[in-house]
Length: 453
Ligand SMILES: Cc1ncc(COP(=O)(O)O)c(C=O)c1O
Image 1: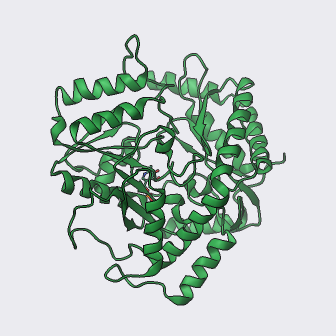
Image 2: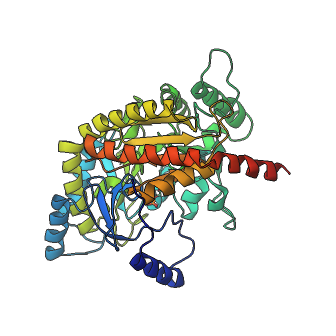
Image 3: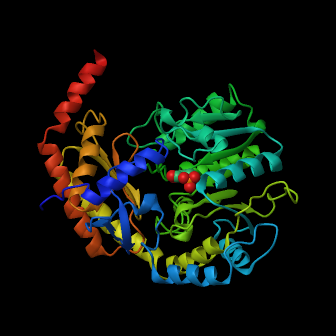
C-alpha cells in the first residue's frame, strides 16, 4: 500500500496553531487532525480516510456519531442542555436505573455521575474513606486511574505522571500487578503469579507495613489498560475478593477502559467471577460525550446530603447519549465485541508466528494488546519498534495507540465488523513487516548499549 503523505497541508497549519495556544502537557501520539467520523472510519481535515482501531482511547463504543446517539443528543439539546445537580430530571434517573440493572453485583446500586474517569475515581476514594472510616488504599504498579490528585496517586504506570507534582495524596501503597508475561514477584512451587501477588499483599504489606484494618479499599483495573493491556490469571480476583471480605476492605474496580461491553460482558470483572463493592466507569458509557459514574452497592452509599456533588453531574446531553449507547451495546454490540474480538485475537496469534518482534498477544473481547520485544527469549521491550509500527500504520490509514512500554493496543468501537477488523489487521501486519525490516531493533540495541555506558 502506498503510504499517505502526513500530515497534509491543512493538518500541518492547524497543528502549528495548536502549539501556540494549547497546553504542551497533552500526550499527542501522531499528527492526526480529525474532520469527521462514521462508525469505525474517520477522515482528517485534508480528506484522508482512516480505520480507527483506537476509538479515542476506547471511548466511541458505538462508533463515531452513531445516528441513534446523535438523535438522542439533538432531541435533548432542543429540550434543555443544563439544569445543575441541585434539581432532578428524567434522563438522569433513567440512566441510574439502567446502571442499577447492569451493575456487577446482586445488591441494589447507587450511582454518582461525573464528567470523566478521574472524577469517578475521586468519588470512589471519598466514599470508601467516608463509609469505612479508614484512610489507606492499595493500588497496583502499572495501574492508571487518572490525573487529579487522588487518582494520580493511585496511577503508577509511568513516572511522568508523578514527576514534579509531589506531594501526592497520603495513604496509598502500590503492589505489583500479576502480569503472567512479566511476573515481578518470585513465584513459589505450586503458585501462579496471582497467588504470589496475594501472598505478597498479606505477608509483606499487611504483615509488615500497612495494617489491613486501616485499609478502606483496594483499587484495581480488572485488565490493566494504560499499563499494557495485561490480563491477570483466572483465579487472581477470587483470591483478592476473599482478602477484601476477610478484612472489611472495599474492592473498587476501575472499569473506565475495560468496562461498558469492551470485553464482551458489561464489566470486565465479570470475566473473573467475583462481585466488587464499587465500580468506576467513564469513556465508553456515552459514546464520547463526557460522562462517568461511580456505582456503589446501596449499603455502602452512606454519605449524607451535600457531602459530595458537582455542577455538571448527570448532564442531560451526556445522560441522553449514555441511554442510547447502553441500548445499542445491550442489543447489538456486546455479542459483537466477543465474536470479533476472538477473531482478531486468533488472527494476531497466527500473525505472531511470522514476526519475531511480537512477544505476546493477549486480551479479552475488543481489548487486545500486542507486546513488541527485541526477541522472544530475552523479552526486552522494543519500544521504538512499537512506535514505528504505530506510525507506519498511521501512514497507511490505520489509527492505533500504544500503551505500556512496548505494547500496541487494539480497542476499536464495539460495532466493528469482521471485514473491517481484517482490513485493519492487514495494514497492521504490513506495518510490522516494514518496521522489522528497517532494523529498528538494531537501533534499540544501540540505545541500550549507550544507556548501559
Ligand atoms: C482505567 C482508567 N481509569 C481512569 C482513567 C481516567 O479517565 P479520564 O481521562 O476520563 O479522567 C483512564 C483514562 O485513560 C483509564 O484508562
